[in-house]
Amino acid sequence: MSVPFLVFFACAFLSVLGAVLLLVSWEPIHSALSLILVMMSLAVLYLLLGAEFIAAVQIIVYAGAIMVLFVFVIMLLNAGNEERTDWSKIAKVVGLPMAFFLLLLIARGLSRSVIGATIANGVGARSNAGVSTRDLSTALFRQYLFPFEATSILILIALLGAWILARKDD
Amino acid sequence: MEFITQHPVLVVSLVKIAVLLFIVMTALAYLTWFERKVVARIQSRWGPYYVGAHGLLQPLADGLKFLFKEDMTPPTSDKFTYTIAPFLALALALTAIALIPFGPPSVQILGQPVFMISNLDIGLLFLFAITSIGVYGVALAGWSSNSKYPLLGGLRSSAQMISYEVSLTLSVVGVLLIAGTLNFNDIISGQSGYYLHFIPRWHVIPQLVGFLCYITAAIAETNRIPFDLPEAETELVAGFHTEYSSFKFAMFFMAEYANMITVSCLATILFFGGWLSPFPDSWTGQVFLPGAGLVLLGMYCAWDTIINMRGIAQLQFAVVTMLCLVGGSICLMPWVRPVIQGPFWFTTKVIAFLFFYVWTRGTLPRFRYDQLMDFGWKLLLPVSLANLVVTSFVLVVPYLRHG
Image (cartoon, each protein chain N blue to C red):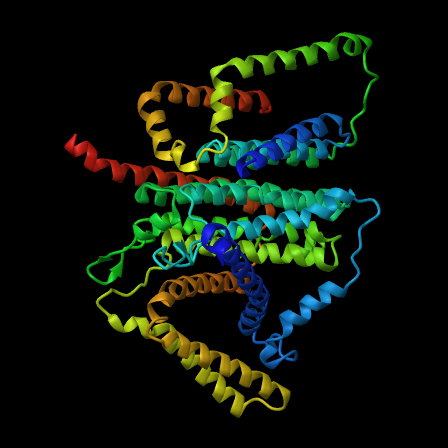
């Protein structure tokens, strides 16, 4: 067992734990905190794969921006505990086995795919063997310039749409 | 011994972390003393004076007081969140300092650079990642206290930190465009050299607008006067930490001061050449400056001890005098002189920034909340965006001309 593998299993455990806590906790803020835990452990997993830039961006964008807004809105609305209905019967009888089946399917697919093998071999790779920020920006702004810009325009349109929907009529 | 030679990175890093933690904790304690003394001078008072000579033992007394006070948790609070919030705030604030290079990487022990804990390729990005989650400490403290004023303070501070973080990050991008790297050491090395043989090539000269945006956003980001609305005592009692007592309260305080140190270090690195000396290399006498400065300080202390001090204070100040004189003589030794240069200039610049912080606190009134938001979104953000556009345009022009 090398150190990277131990870190990998610790973070994998934490991310699954966070995901479960997110679902079962009653307090909205606790759910948000659990989601932050998931994001942070994912960032560490990216670091283990040698993707420094993606790890930092993961923390900045998800943990630092999106989740802060979540927490902010929950605080602003001062949301109380969530109210739960009883589990519907169909969810119990069909939903749970289906979810389990889906998980098995994903696990099987991953274990056979190239991506799965690459990820498994990549854990513990030296970080300097990974993609540098410079390589990433070269790829984004040369090779994939058009899709990159198209995506940013799409996001801009979404922003403007949200603004138009939210503004008061006068 | 064998272990040390086999794992130089691990051992040296642990020693560096321990030493840096000790230094930073002491610096945090004495930063409160520094602030109180400077604000007192601005307001024509003496400041702390009775505990130790010139109040030099006041931070120690404050720390002990915090330790022995009763640690109360409000019964209606959310216990878990209430407890982790101060830890989160302090831990994140201290982690950020691990990324700062205090001296050139050429000074090494066992092949490891002495004056920095980590030398990341994405140093700046990682620093922003850590500061961007720093808001949770404040927000969660405000929410978990389950009381009016902390909640309002927490909300205000989250809103403020989100708003000003945008300008803070954008104001720095101009420097990144010029430097072409996210690594702190490379950013600093890129600022060596001189305009007209005597003006240092620091980024503050081409990026003056960016620097002004940065320093404004940085003061807002650390919740200091004139942007200290999260803890405006006339409106919100003490803001997000109203319900906190004892050492948990002290942890928020330490986190705030640690954040001050971090943003000052970042300003020094990005705009003022980090550990580079402001004087041209041709002046060889500058290697004596740190030692000479300390010896002069020691001589002033000696004069003060003999003329002004009486009783126990005289004894205490004699110790300070001895420390200054001995430290100064060590800095004057031939093999210490070149090593101490980098950290000396770095700390001098950081202390100048901290003084600036305290100075603004002593002189400026607090903003109103709507003024704060208007200033952040309608002035600071457009100006830093314009700075970014102009900088990138200027950098691209040579390429356009030559195709």
